[in-house]
Image 1 (cartoon, rainbow, N blue to C red):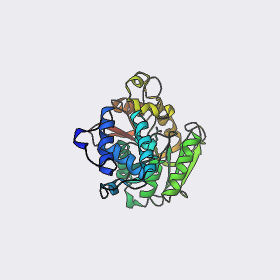
Image 2 (cartoon, protein in one colour; image 1 turned 90 degrees about the horizontal axis):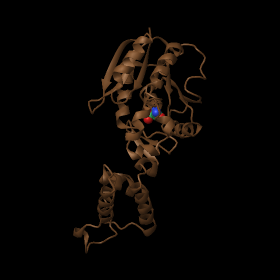
Image 3 (cartoon, rainbow, N blue to C red; image 1 turned 90 degrees about the vertical axis):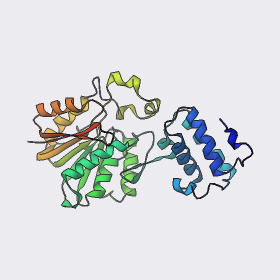
Image 4 (cartoon, rainbow, N blue to C red; image 1 turned 135 degrees about the vertical axis):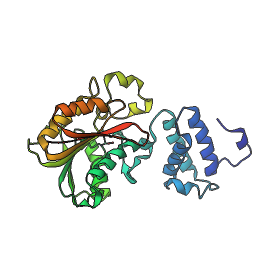
Length: 294
Ligand code: GLN
């Protein structure tokens, strides 16, 4: 809704466009309307978000304002900002995203932190790692940047997702150490313990929880979210996979959903993993479970 305070002001300035867009998105229930408006305006203008602050009084050309309005309209209909701008930051790196991939979440950085606690960046870790369900490649790529000698196999069953991941790996200069494999979960691997570590942010939404997901999440690929009837299907599959593919003493690390940590701990204990630990994210939620292969 146009703000009364705006009457009489120049309708074409960056500041005015931002204020009006923020009100429009707030009215449509966006959780962070000002930030969304800034990201979309920056995208329409082809500048980065902070550059907007240096040009509040500028009047963008009509074609760019039209482009901004179109982005706003789609945002107002519930399309996530990252799909509209085609990018999302993760681990301070900019990743290309499309509707073929899950949008990386800040809490998933807990998985990167956990991996770095096990294998500190300066440790010269040169082994092979596997990232299961790589999506846009964020986990394998972030870790490949931290461990300059390590190599990764990044698996996804979606060829379209791997196309995005491949471009992200090249963009971040790790294309020669991250190998992409299109396959159904771990079915393509010979049963040999090749890997030092297995990392995954698997689909973990249970059937009962789909109904209560925020509408925006419905725009994301269902295959990246659906964890089977109880949401735990892929944690069992990870335990089975890691038992064959991870070396003795190597680690399995996975992100878990709300309330799943204890169930995952039990599944992994039963599968024979030891030294199981649960780590919290910045919001204080149990977020990552790690276990070591005997
Ligand atoms: N590895 C990606 C991420 O962590 C994708 C995960 C997925 O699709 N479930 O965001």
